[in-house]
Image 1 (cartoon, helix red, strand yellow):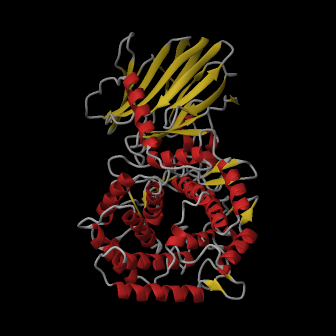
Image 2 (spheres, helix red, strand yellow):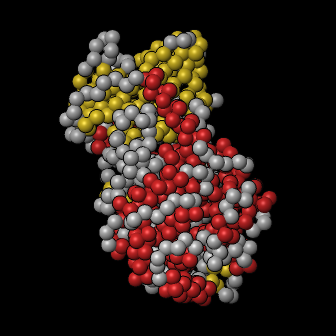
Image 3 (cartoon, one colour):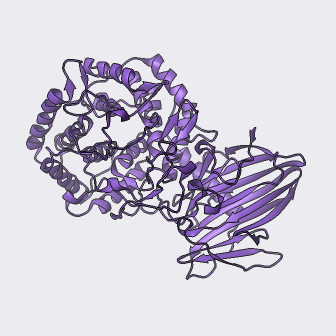
Length: 607
């Protein structure tokens, strides 16, 4: 049971949010029954409910019992994102079923209030704030006493809210809903373009049934056996929920600017498609039977990066948009005062040398899964490899997108090695045309360079960057792409250094922020994906007990509906950063596979 009454002025803890998704966008619902984040019609659209990054005045849809002492439990109904919250009050028991209907080509949110025992009164409060709370809409009553409807319009956006009477008060619209045992009330919100006619009401029962069926059918296709099965299924569902159904773009998270450092400036917009994260997600989906998704993602990739390979970006919009310039929304105070709130992402202009390697590794995995090359897919890969060769000596900003001076990061250099390695394999093993001998020369050159400069010969471990004595959690990826074996003595000593330098309170940091490598003030918390990488390393190097112990602890950090954010604060026991985080969930999947021997890719791909 959870005591769920809280101040209307502050958002809930990050771990208190569940996600709803229609595979076009997502909403975050707190344990308190408040939708505090909703961008329509896409993940990266301006928010309509934005109190997550401020307070109630920045937009929310609250629906909870009027009884301030009400308590609740919640869970997803089956394998999907139909959220059921059961409320217990002094007068009775009722449930709220929250869902974003899938497959109807609309932008709807449905909230069904259902009486279970006795009688329960719910208070509904809606504060509509379009365009990141910069536009308070013009609102009019458009229904009847028997069928209440509210229409709100501002600029290009409009919504219609149906199901119960709402009355204006203090820039909000409020009302009550009463249900007794066996009775129900359906509340709906539908977004539409303001120049269009008001859409017809949604068939709520049909929408619920079809959405539940669709998610269940998708989950039935998951191929997985072994420990942590429920966590793997939920994580793969999250990855699907973060994939735009029409374009195939996979966003890194559903949110922007949830802080990595509470009250600090490490706040970033993750509602875009990183080639790296999407590539890793593709591999996770392929490993569990989802070849169709791989084909769709490859089509997205071909569209997004079409043109001069020299112009390839590290991230794109959901449809392949390139203009993601970072700017701040100074009117929003930020989550718990963590400012600035950012939209867009300045890393879009960075050079990150590892990205093409990630893409080449993923496309090799697609070939091995039986995805045939198209007329354009292999020429694109050849062009990407030519771009990699053209920039082979160029320092980069690395996997962590540092905002200080570019360096020769060891992980980035290894991914350049991996890019040429997968090019060679495409020719030698799959019969594709290409300069395999030239790529072999470049691959071997990279290996020699990394062995000489990416390795501290005195201490006996790999290093974060050439000329640095620091270690970095990204070094755990070296065995995953086949650069070395997990039980290579150099790798084992690297793990020892990581445990000594970056493992705190049992969880792994990305790197030492105190070294100044990222050029940012403040600190951050352990990065969950890195700890899952450590599980995989433990398992692959024979430390099975350590792998299981760490995996058990990490899975226990998920919230009550199985979601993980980007980071975790083990002292305050709080989720940190944007949520739900694709990288955290796909790393969980890989770690679970490693525990049952399903991630033999590292051994299979060693040179």
